[in-house]
Length: 266
Image (cartoon, rainbow, N blue to C red; front, side, top):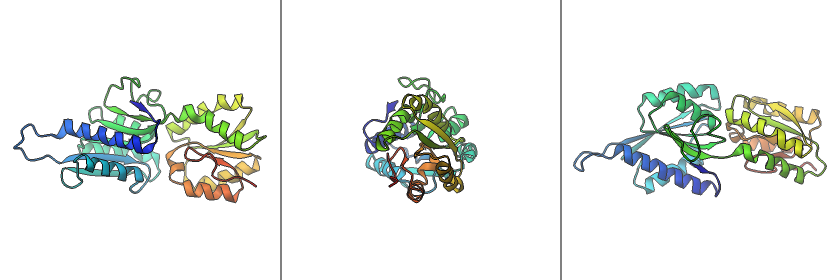
């Protein structure tokens, strides 16, 4: 188990090595003269389409000798940002008897963990794998799941601090979060104490679908919030450009995981 510390490229490279190691242990033939078995990787994601992370991991596996269509195949399943679809998609991948499962985010990891106790699971960007029950501890994960913690909850206070520094005199911040996302729930909860210490009042904006994003910005301005804090979740990650456009439209400084300020009101 590792904490995210040195950037996405290094993290993804290690993920590639982890996957390669799992496949090596599971799929190498017992004798050299046996035909090479085609390994199968299942990928569960909220966001539709092949992401940059997926492309990097596929390329790195190729560098390590696992070539798509030759000795490894990929089964991609996407929830189209509808987290309630995760359990069925996870069960689908398990029925395919894949050799290893990969997923970014807490919701997908929990769905896979509930679907199988035997197939190895490698997760990315899980906020707190111990608190959510994915692993026993960071040092000794146990079970069939391992991966990377994004420690988002621990960083929530720092991001609020950065917004306060960027917008002098700020006292109220609207917080956009997804109540259907376990990681988002946890980050919202962990934001409360840091906000009190910083003298900030947080206004909750619960958003579970993209069609409600603009209304959340309207509400933020109606309650006179001086900025918007977007808690990291799959929905926000899939709508980065829309969030940036809305922040500019409503002249509202908006902080996210990837960018402290999407726009600054002038």
